[in-house]
Image (tube, rainbow, N blue to C red; front, top):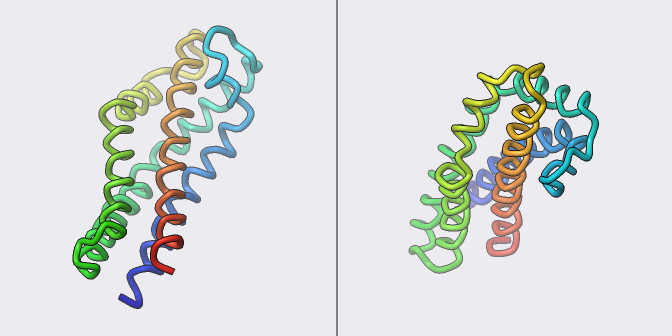
Length: 157
């Protein structure tokens, strides 16, 4: 048990860092999420953010896949060590629930596919909708990863 808490914390801190970096890329266009009826940021910022996300997209699935694979495995191992008590079970349920939400309700695969097929110089409404969708899903994932780190500290340290 001595190594599992630091391993889980480090793994999900890495996941938090991934999505924090995306937040930094998306920061100039965050208003898109809250103002869906109108464009409240410059066209240049929207297109720049889209291009930046496009360049980062080959790196994100393997990095986040590492977090998902090893993080969930470690959380399950921790559950086993803790005899599947409520505290240990609450963390993987929290993370898996949000991850399933991102996959099935948030339709992240569609957003990533659109990112790869929509050119940054296409019609602004298409680019804006894609960036808005990605920002929302990335922030939910940031919440999920940071939530696991906080829960690990709160429940096991």
